[in-house]
Image 1 (cartoon, rainbow, N blue to C red):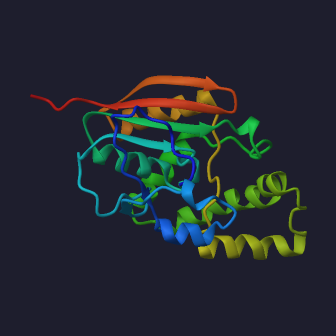
Image 2 (cartoon, one colour):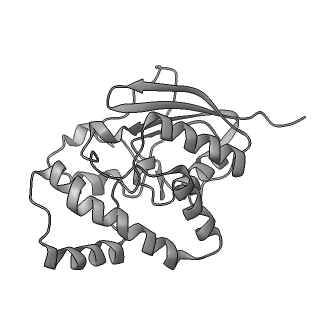
Length: 218
């Protein structure tokens, strides 16, 4: 939005967001409007709706995947829009170096199960499973992030229900470098056999991942 990843001068980046640059300027008056990028694709970044398959050389998704309630589904879509041989550059926060510290570590199988449930149109079960994530967010992550106290016990259930009903975007899932690699290997075995991890760098508070989409068979 206002702090895009630096790329070589001869690289052209098309930016995607759910809101236009003009809307973002209005939504975030604290940001310098000159820093906000032009939005080329108005779409959900987890669904990539309306974007043709195999049309990009690379996808950059920094601190995005942890916000996806269905991270396997997001990876499927990012690989769908990559050309064969294309690169996904993805950064994830390490849970113990962020306001997620103290939350439960999300298991790779949990994220795969969410994806499989949604493939079966069992959204109600996934919504139930997400209640635990909202509980952790409201009682651990959000207080650590804002410095404000968590909701009182009598207000907590109401807050969780409200966040769930509105599908509020949070850090649904938590990662370590090891769990992120285990997750990617599980996804490769079960869902995306043409995905390959080229790099997995432990960079203090984040994990930098470089993935490749396999070349088309001849």
